[in-house]
Image (cartoon, rainbow, N blue to C red; front, side, top):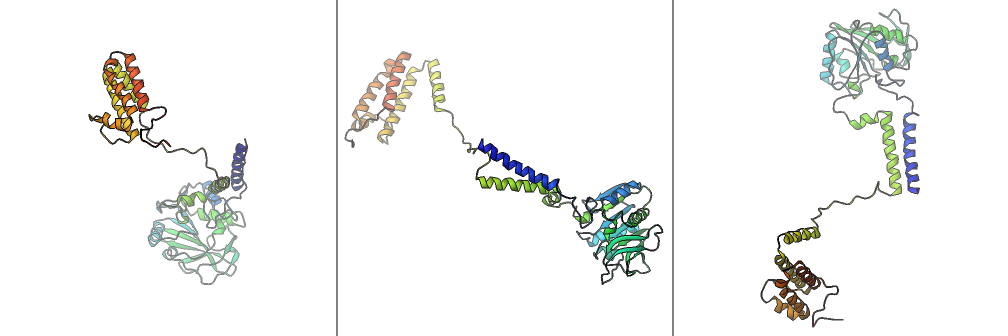
Length: 377
């Protein structure tokens, strides 16, 4: 009863850890603004807004392949673009795609492929004023740090407090790139502040009606061949499960007991000697082989007596009784008497039984006889 109570306490503690880790935890934030996150820094609300405006949404993960057309959001790539991926992204824009790229700091080589350049000195600010092409937008709330350098190709659409271009538009081929110096402007925590929602709606309006809006999670680590352990730990339930296993492990280590009874190694069990003997005996009985049975018992008795007296001789040799008689005359005399009864006893089952018992007593005496001349002390 005490052991049962201890187990209940241990498992109850593990369950409490799971509940506190999952239910008592705030929504996981995302400093890199993942669309799969409902936290303050995530962008799941932007995906819902795109769906409400009639655009099917999708997540780019597994491999970085982009179907033609539509609109793509790329937020703060934590797994950097390769040169090939940067070229593929520019080619996709040239073919008519609309790209919204937002990152706090410069990320190469993707910004070089898109023709973007930033100022070397940071100019932080909490809001930006809308400029060209955004008639319904006044102020866009954010936390701008490293603006872009405007040029004839990079048209400023948002200006920070110092007049720096914290948002620019670049036309490339048949497509267009909107580059923002702050992804927080489109995050869950700020989408309803100032004119951020109208600004997001204006960006989504550049996509053709009914075209797909995609979110790049490939460059947030959602790639083929990623770590399973890392993926599990990224979820609250995964962390809760790990903590629960840790609590159980520590509890079992403190108790110093194994889980369940020990299981012995299985060994190959030979066929029972009694079963084998019984089978051979029944076979000899049905075939009338009484004499054969007695002869087999005689040979077995000779081997047993030979082992007991340490006689390393062949039990079938003619002088066996001479050798045994010098070692133990009494046992040899009893064995000779039993062997002389074999021919007479083979005529009936009762005779076989009587001689068999006599041979058994000789082979396995209740109190082994001490050979003459041996040490009786």
